Amino acid sequence: MSVADNELLALHQLGVDYGRDWHIWRSAPTPAGNSGWYATRRRHSARDTDRGLWPTLAADTADDLRRELEAQARAAAIPADAP
Image 1 (cartoon, rainbow, N blue to C red):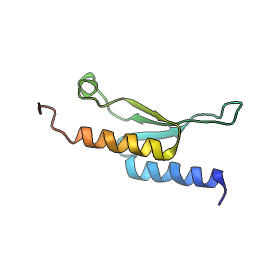
Image 2 (cartoon, one colour):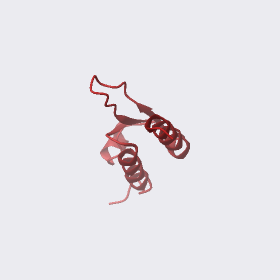
Image 3 (cartoon, rainbow, N blue to C red):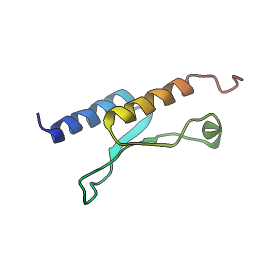
């Protein structure tokens, strides 16, 4: 499988795993050929930001984005009124 195929597969799997709450996407390649990995939360409020839940995540690789998404899932699981 080529690098492009692996990246498409990773993009698809992130969408399967997190697509209910996040829109997962890639930026257009730069002249150097790099493109970032991004996730934009489907629903977000100012109160979410106060809890450390970010509206958009950015990463250099699919694995890095997955780690960010997992951290956000853990933070979201904490009740809003927890100390």
